[in-house]
Amino acid sequence: MTASAESPARVLAWDLPTRLAKWLLAALVGLAFASKYYGDIGLVWHQWNGLAILVLVVFRLFWGIVGGSTARFAGFLRGPGAVAAYAASLLRGRPQHFLGHSPAGGWMVAALLALVAAQGLTGLFTSDDIVVYGPMTAVASDATIASASAWHQRLYPFLLALIGLHVAVNLAYSLFGRDNLIAAMITGRKPAGSFVDRAPATPGAIGRALACLAAAIAVVFGGIALAGGDPFP
Image (cartoon, rainbow, N blue to C red):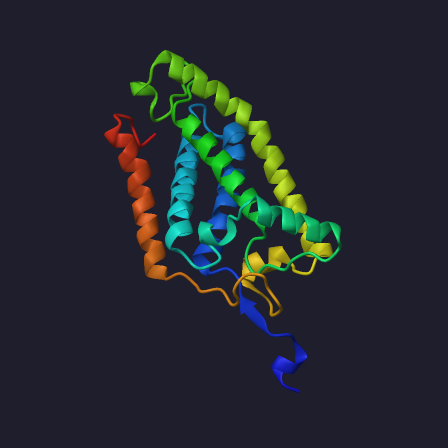
């Protein structure tokens, strides 16, 4: 019996840069929480962690424009009608099958990126007025620092809640749904089937991904320096 007869054919769902960005961002967010409580007194590692997160978020924004077909925002950020149709299909027990993100999943990704970006940006202006000074505190007003520091704390539980919801939904869909989303985001492949979106995915070029990463580093570190901050904690 041939290998193809033993197991169902699999098609590309997410390319390598998309998967690496997702897992690296997940790891960095986890390390940000850890370094806040177990870092040095000046939270230097926490600040470096935040800068790395901002670089990955900016990379993902660029990759969402020029990356592989399932990585592009235009491919998975759909309007209210598509979200409503997907929700209705779930209620009927016959969910629409997507190679990339579903309409609801796409907006979850956007919300996570937005909240992580907000957490990282407010961190640039955060200070405890004792030993912790974010990269932009030297050029920010006291009012801006106080507001950013407060929002950096306020956003924390919302980010935890959204991450928890994201993980729970992915686990539930992987265990009880049609696809193992967690395995697919590791391997990049899903079993072949009838998808609402195009299959297989068209991967983004590695050279283009490296260019996006270089541009993201320049935007974050160069932007801080041009604004008068210190990009090196």
